[in-house]
Image (cartoon, rainbow, N blue to C red; front, side, top):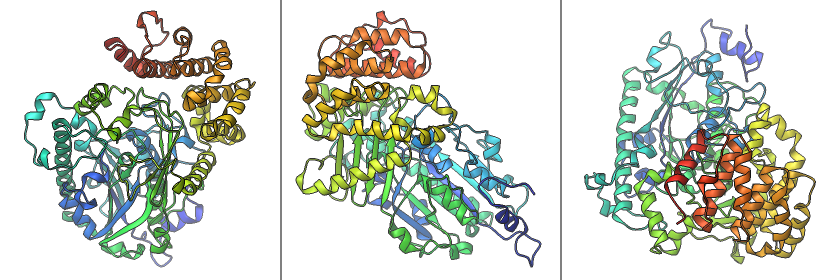
Length: 618
């Protein structure tokens, strides 16, 4: 008998042979994942929205559980989906960048949990989105992965199955409509929608919200049809049905951003009558315990009777031995946001009970930094125009301004996260507690984003988790340098002055980056940073030039032109162009595309070049 991944020999024997008194396998539950794309819970009446009727999803809830605190870990599809498929935090595994440049290998002995089910007799089907950032073969993960994949194609009627189906009608692209679309009627009246305080109250924003509510209704009907198929096949009471959004979205400042609007997803699990004994909850219950995408795979494996590989980051939230009290005591979720297409960022978040703590490691970049795909949406375009013409409220302007290095929000009182409490003396204890907890989590997983993506691609992806373990001590040092952005200016000045002269290039890299985060208070370091414009490491030179450009001191562009025309790999070029767009659009640098003689102009680099070629300094 061949041993399978994540399962001990004893467990395999039990699963394959069943009880000693029977030659037939023990009956096991089926699993169905119904995934709506790009929607946070804010667009469903089930979660308190004024609109967003979802009768089919509500029917699942009556026979199941509504999770009030479910989180996607990442606010963008490929990273969230890779987290979901593996049960591993993406920054630990090296698959945290959306639109990967290279696929990451999984830790030794770990395979995606759909393959574990497949190895243990489940018929696994995916309809049809994949978009994984890790190395895989679809045939290894799925018996079928196509637009026609279905549990109905399994080899025999008594074969257990796992079916995953994505519904794209709520995807961000559904809001990339032309101006003439604004004249088309919507089911939900634009005049009836309630806008969050960070959105300007304009006809465009109202129409976009209304249209999105309509898309949620379309999804609900499709879910209802699929559930009816399970019922007509006589499988409904043998099947756990998980409905959830694949991450938040999709109005401006949601998808791609580590706020509640980007991470907090709707989630309902229907409990089948024949397997209700596995769950310590009464159907029709709303649960306050926190769950996130790293937990979904472990939960399914546990419900299926399969043990878990110790390398997984998640833990089950349903199944034998998991009490309602245990789940109710879970109150924490970790989130991450890195590169989205051509737009770089580095954000980590921790939702702990009623508070969310957000750490912006590149805080000088505004949320609204150009991303070509984002700005296809009319609402995004209008929002930026209103900012540039001075027609926004303070809450609405935040999106286009440099961010604080850390943010603290009371989500109960401030659900839209516009009132930062990080500087409020009344919440100093909360701030310090969550700051320490987030730092501990970042270092616990050996977060690989402490190095630039260029090093990830050139070196780290040969074995990401092993690299993280070997370089843990250096990661602690790098995080210490990053945390100088949170220190008093005299302390930061003295320490950064030393790190700028370190023999370790990553110390110098992070010292320059932290100078940019702090800004004006570390202007006395302009001299030692200027010395680094001739550093032998191009990414150090780039970050030095970026700091000088952010202060509008000297001319950083000759150094940036040199970096762009010297390096040849996509990741370094893309980071340099990210700096160019920031300095040009937000610090009024006069960039001249004619001076570029790039050695690579494909991939995501092409997006930045296209934007720079058709626009000029605002």
